Amino acid sequence: MKTEFKISTNQNFFKEKADAYIIFLEQKSGFFTHEDFSKDPHLTELKKIYPHIEILLEKRGFNAKLSEIVALPISINQGHEMCILVGLGAKKENFVENYRRALATAIRSALSYGATSIVISLLAAEDLTMGAYKLGKETAIITEMTCYKHDDFLTTDGSKQKRFAQVILITENQYKNEMEKGLREGVIIGESVNEARYFVDTPPSHMTPIIVAKHAQEIAKKNSISYQEYNLKEIQQLKMGGLLGVARGSVEEPRFVKMEYKPQHAKNKQPILLVGKGITFDSGGLSIKPAQSMETMKDDMAGAAAVIMATAAASRLNLPIHIVALAPLTENMPSGTATKPGDVLTFYNGKTAEVKNTDAEGRLILADALSYGVKNYNPEFVIDLATLTGACAHALGPFYTGLFTTNETLAENLENAGQKSGDYVWRLPMGEDYRKAIKSTIADICNIGDSRVKAGGTTAAHFLEYFVGETPWAHLDIAGSAFDVPGIPYYAPGATGVGVRLLIELLKEMK
Ligand code: BES
Ligand code: ZN
Ligand code: ZN
Image (cartoon, rainbow, N blue to C red; front, side):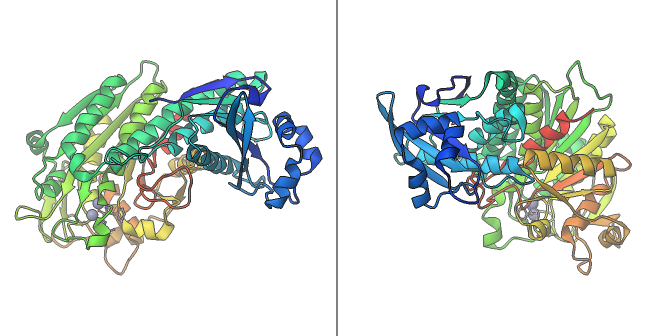
């Protein structure tokens, strides 16, 4: 079931029929007064139902701190519904993030009361500082994201995710068109984020390389994106020794997926290349992981999911940008046929690497995809997304994606896109001292860094750098941000879909 989003300019909020009514309030230093409630027309309506609302709120200590909620039963339109007051916190730099979180918290509250339709008061579009377009967009994205849960395998009553049949946004006539535009785009972005999450959350034996490729093909077909995939034999013919070296330990065949979105109105002469790490399960291979570290390793394809879904979203949004997305897909498993520590692999571009640790497998498959992409597409720039290193996750925690690049323009554009989209990035260093750490005595480079250099996220980035040559390139390490991000109400346990919002924001801003 899809949620229907609708805009209404009906200033009498409670006249719209719904199960729950959501009103946002900005934080006060003291408590709300009678006067505060006479300023906002929706609050005035509420005051007719609860004449002493300010006393009620003060008794509860409610002064609209971020995500603070008061849910009031109301009898209107011959029904018994809920009115949810939610705090936006104090106005500060990143107020949009406050709005996202307040909205998500209110949505969770409405869902917990069994609401199937909600009305959201966005009367104060101007007061919310972001403007009607952004407000519509964020409202749609966050509603979609908050209503996501992977429930394919939940069989008991009531455990399936509930969604709204209808969401009505109330605004003023002057904001209607802009808000509608934002809503339409937001729905596409939110759905794409959720589809990326679905890829990642689906258990690894149900989302093997062949199955990922099949889904990617269906998505491409639906969105007029050209699609090509290479099977084991074809990957052998391409001499992608990295992808083959990782895949050889598994009974599941690898795939190499290529998607191309080339609109007639494309602004860029050379395509943008997106590359996503697609390890459908990372056991570590012969350098096997301890049990606890392996528990979430179905998420090791989050980069692939992000580039597939960002490309799909770009097409649905009709962005004037030529994009090529590549996803090398394989499991990383130990077996009698697996690559051994000490083995040397030869990549698509003829370069070699010594594999000292088979758990540093992401860079091996990305090396082939990156060198294939730069050679065959001569891209304007390359961005890769990968759940690449525990080191990066430990450095930044789950709230930022690690950004590695030597290109200042890309760094700035990605940082801006991160700030605007909510997929925040934090730049980490690169440079000659680190570059030396991946030397090998028997191959061109080694797949793990000198242990004295320690910075595992950076040495991994330098390994990738070796395969992009002079092409402007940025690497996004999403090991921390792709899965199980705590404390953010629009996420659920499991995948976050990180990267989709970021890439769409970046591509939209391209000149
Ligand atoms: N997929 C992991 C990285 C990872 C860790 C992703 C935690 C998500 C959460 C990657 O393949 C890996 O195992 N990297 C090793 C590299 C090391 C052997 C140089 C790591 O980070 O320990
Ligand atoms: Zn690994
Ligand atoms: Zn991995």
